[in-house]
Amino acid sequence: MITIAVIDDEETTRKMASLILSKSGYRVETFAAGSPFLQKMEQDPFDIVFLDLQLPDMGGLEILDHIQTLHHQTETILVTGYGSIENAVEATKRGAFHYLTKPCRSHDLCLMAERASEKIKLQQENKRLKSQVGQSSLLPGFIGNSKAMQSIFAMIGKVAQVNCNVLLEAETGTGKQLTARAIHELGPRKKAPFVYFNCGGFSEDLICNELFGHEKDAFTGASACKIGLLESAAGGTVFLDEIGEMPLSMQVKLLHVLQERQVLRVGGIKPIDLNIRIIAATNKDLRQLVEKKTFREDLYYRLNVVAIRLPRLCERWEDIPLLINHFIAKANKAFSKDIQGISSRALGLLMHYNFPGNVRELENIIQHAAALTEGEKLLPEDFPAHLRKLHLQAHYQEELLPLDDMEKRYITKVLQQTDNNIKAAGKILKIPRTTLWRRLKKYGLSQATDCNGS
Image (cartoon, rainbow, N blue to C red; front, side, top):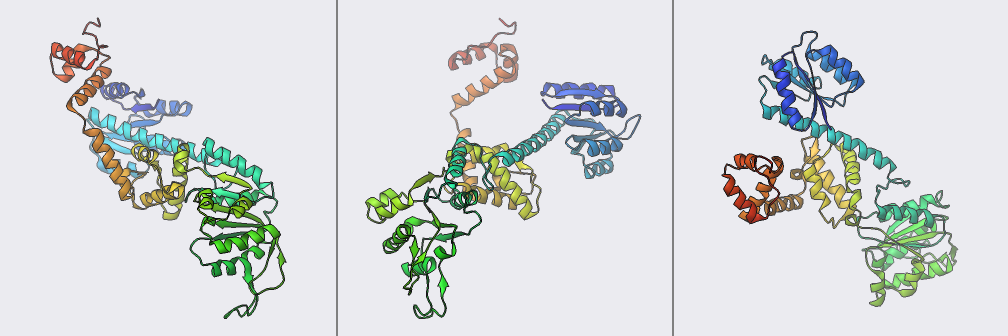
């Protein structure tokens, strides 16, 4: 429960504020002067402080400075009865959350307490998530506490120690390259090179030249010998991304490399022995490609000694808050901002989004929002257009309910607020008790009592 201290030398003001804030669910303690408050603060710090600028024993700004120095997680709201806006503005510059002028309205007190509470909770959640990020895995670069990711971490740890080829089956944006590098770094080949090559979108000649290299004068323009990527990874790991895009003719040559553990440069006559590990990745179903005769079955089994299927982001939704916090921290550093977190509405929207682009799309969304936001937390309004549209559609659908459903929902809410008391509920709804009883019967709400509790 959020704790609040009210410091004011006027007894009426203290009692009024305590009554209003207590009814709103806060634990409130009042003080008539600054000294007893500071003594209690040393023993048990408050979350929120409503502080009068004029006190009998010391000034409010002096107390504010003390709170800012020793209890920086406490939010202070200045209250002044003299309309001294200049002092109030000075107080906000010195770290106060906000200020109010007397006489304080009930609505203003509750609203200010609610906003300060939300900031405190966001800071606490931010701290908790940062702690979880640090403990989320033993593998650098990975974020995740979900069962799906813990299984992946365990699989990576096992496979890294075994000198076999690995096939990563995963959609775009799920961390294929990160996984391949982790297998390399955790294994006995970690001191040797890690070489990356994307097989998609290249002709057979280009792939062959990049992977195998060529001898001098092997073709027009080959003025010098070139070592291929397979040869350059001596003792290390070669990561072949989008292996399903490799032309069939090139698949034959790669199969020969895997079988013989030798490579022949273009234009060469002497095979070169290879000591490498192959990790391949695909976002396609290679078994279907084998059935369609567009991927060689023998190459598939050569690559698929151990298969690891990386989960989609929607399959590890528990990790979304952790990832959001991680990407906000990255965005703060990149954009020189101090974003404290994400609003509950924005988080709820992301938790129900299917993320076709997976983790990479989530990072892009957070970067977009962080670049545009002007507040301390990300809001749905900061998201890209397609997400804003989803947010508006969800809100629109929620609001457009049949009249009976709306009436039933509102009557239920009023009854909950009045502990199912018919008389109290009737006063709020401004309808006779007999009319309310008919509504209750109509909607099957039979838990209410009359004003005597019977």
